[in-house]
Length: 408
Ligand SMILES: [Zn+2]
Image (cartoon, rainbow, N blue to C red):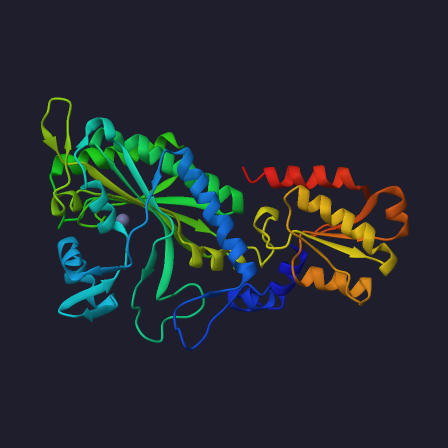
């Protein structure tokens, strides 16, 4: 915190591009504009977030799918993207066939839904695609850093349900959004956008869906702002916004109801009475894109990621080379406990290694010398808290395990 206040007082705002370089997380190269080269440490962050989303998806009963990146024009025509979004798509002519890189996963998820006869008992059917690589052609010159990319990945999912099931699904999505915001110390707020004048779909369905969204918001006990007539023409939506430590507002998650796409794709299920009905589609992303979310997070926390997300969680610093063996023993136990660690045994002063650990935002630095070795202890420096003094090594492990479990 102190460091952040100081930097802000000096007028220096955290910049994720600089942090990415300082912490060796990612780089950008002219040969591939608008795309990220993830380094090993950056991939740790990426994979931990992916793991978080996968775990939450599993708890909520999502099935994971994976769909192709290169798809024929006919699908984009069917989904309406070709008409509305063509200029933002990367297109190819392959033989006689026009194809495009997917700018979103939705149409392909719908093909999976429609690939078999669905019954009311299958609903809600929840399909998640957290690894779908998307490409969107942004206006040339506007790409830069992790915020505007040609290539990115969303923690995307689609829920196919009946109108009666909307409220329950939305409630669990709001709960997850709140959990994630709390995890990172974001302030959350919600916006409900309702039926615009040019809306498509039955007015009764709109009414029912808007009522379900309002009830879900009320039951979640969150404050929300009502944006009358601000919904998209195909359904009402909730924008899940956060304010970061720099008082900036971001829309990171969206929950969008869609009445239109089930018509376009003729999606249907067989109801209890044997009649065929259209499901409602809910599009959702909780982090938005992984890339942009990591950029926001780095600036929000000024690079000091929580323990569970830190690429290197513990550095073990032997005071003299005769302590290297003990350092290795400590390292083996960190390894056993599942933590990411480094033994800093290169020929540098302890002070220099500590300074470097601070610059690298390492959550814990363990200094081990003769005294620590004899007493099976470690001298602990915690990021943001400074020197905690000597601690029995097993006590230290208990402490970091507790902190790790706080991820929730
Ligand atoms: Zn979608």
